[in-house]
View 1 (cartoon, each protein chain N blue to C red):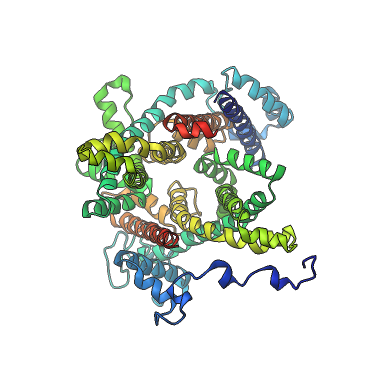
View 2: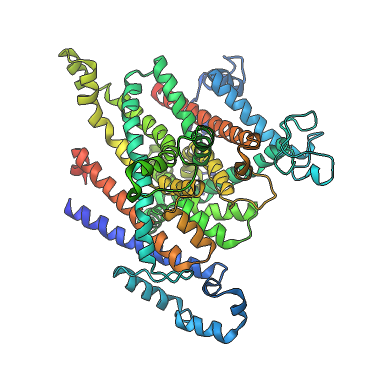
Length: 317
Length: 317
């Protein structure tokens, strides 16, 4: 188990280094000069000034040297300064991170709250009318792109009914009510797809579990269906769901980028989007690496949770 | 050519014998009195039939868009030339009305289908060819190459694809369909490689591979004639599941303004353009959203049906 953990952690470090290096090379190889982000257009004509700026920011050093310097600073928590605003990147990220995190956490929490009972119920009623209805709806939910869901919600609940704000964000420090109001629609847009995915996954595992012998014996003992479903059936059926929740973090990150763009939420995704457009390479680099670290950690944690839930995997590894 | 000097045709059993009969029609030819395709279509539930017909309609419309008589030019802005109105309802000349710059919505839907389908199908094809080749080689030859390739795949997959796509497409500046497909290819191959390798691993252990080796078939020939043809069905099944995801991906990129360049019609781009005027005229957003949803849903429904059919068949054997 500890050897397993060590291998995992090593792979995590390797992945982060590879991804940060590839992003670094990418920002340097693709068209677009960081100097253009640093100084206004008329100043770019002045060759001497441009050279001075390049020297000042260390842009003339070989790429590997610059990468090494960046990595050295990054492990100490210094992600450099934004090429556009001049502010430390770390400050801006810590300012925006809670927003994106809240959005994603609310989306996942809400999805699980809805999907677990739905999945268990449809698995229990396999093939009945209620199962066919809910499974059909899940398939439809799966077919709705996040931005379409978001637009529908904006149109109905913000533009027509005026229950929620259409765009913008209220921080938790502005009060719980306004904060919840601004997180509701974006999180729900993300959650619709997630609910569909989770429900389907749990349903198919539940169907398999309910065919086991110990379920039959529980039934023979005269236990109620609900008791069997949630006390005997649920835990062994959660395996795939745990994995899928972990794997879907990738979808969630991409989705929150789209949702933050649509709802004009000042989170990390929106900042990444604008940073790419402004050629603010330090910012792009930092956010990309941060997202990757998060993604890889979640994946590693998923595998570990998997081992905790199912003792059989612990043994074979 | 084998070492025993047998003609190459002997190294491989006739496909009928090797794979076994697939259905009653193959086992007793002519017994059903229907062609294989008619059989398949007849067995679909009504909803899947509708989905199938819709997909045929979309593919035909996209392929034959230039030949449809009376279909408007998707980029023609009538009001500029004084013979059209913006935000028009359905009329005889514009069946679905016009958008906020008086372009024909139906024509834009049809040409937009072209972008979506070409993107999705070419990426699926690239995934099958590149991923299938790499995965088959890794899964059959094993060794250091496999270790290296799979580590690369794992690292690659630990990076959220949408972030990477947004990153590259913004940096590139020039975005036509060919560029988009090539950028997409960078992110599509790892998942296909992983599946091809897993399938190749299990195929390698099959008796017919051992038999081929026993009569002296070269490893290269086994890879091409035994492994790859048996990896292909798994990849095809996976690509059917992947197509709707690719269509959503294309529309999401277009929605973010990072798909094909305007004024080229694309479903996501149409929705993005129409969302500014939702309260004035909602239809330019509704039609592409509905078309997008129906197409994605149809692919999902068809993929689900194919999966249940395959499961039923393997259970019957």
